[in-house]
Figure (tube, rainbow, N blue to C red):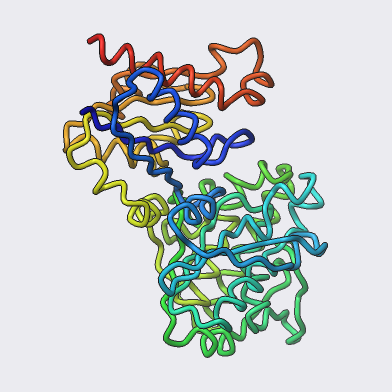
Length: 374
């Protein structure tokens, strides 16, 4: 019996990873009715991670928290085997704002701190903070403030919330936070290696996606530099050049400095919970995918993670995506033996998004039949 492992990430704006896996499974069944199908939806530590964790058996905790622009938002985190998984985007995600220069400066991470505080109150033994998809570039200052830290100007007064306020920060008081997380292990799960500052830092790379123009990017980068210094004044290590510290608008930097967090591969962390390694042992075929298969997919994203696991096991890899922006050489580097982009089989991008499940089923069946015919 042919064993097929289905391990997609989310198709952003269309399907969760769980929904994508279900659609692909239907296509595999259409082409290969007797197949043994093992579904292992995955995530890379960004948006959609909680959906994958819930499918893996995590308990979901829902609560209202302060959103990125102060309005209350419905947020949630997951608990599995004593570990609380907090997805930053659930509290301060880009979907909660209409990105503009003003929101780029004002958005903050206070609500993330509220989620972490609730998890600590309820006895979490470990915290995992996923960093992707935020509207904020505040270096995690709001998050630490919600946990009791002082984020202070030169006169010892609080600077307020939002990345823009950090141009006034002079010092931090981190003792209340450290006491609160004492004995609790903390990790930041991310799929990026950007530092906090500079041309590849949080403001320069991710700020424009959040509404920042050139002036705001420059201001935020300067402000984050002041924030890194203020954290050192509070007794934290220098986080300005740590790989991955720029993730989530620098929320990773705040977690490293204030919570003693380590940076871990988001994909590796989540894959370890979904059983994908065990599933690939003895598999005949693996199918992965995500919304956009591009150069970023080669660096820490879910398809690359699946490819890295399939290659040493000599398991053929098929890839499905909303769009594919890798050339033949890029696909070959991933080890892909067959691929299909949904937009190549739809009259428009909007149609592809609206009918992603049907298209995924159809294209999965075609790819599997082509693979069988080889």
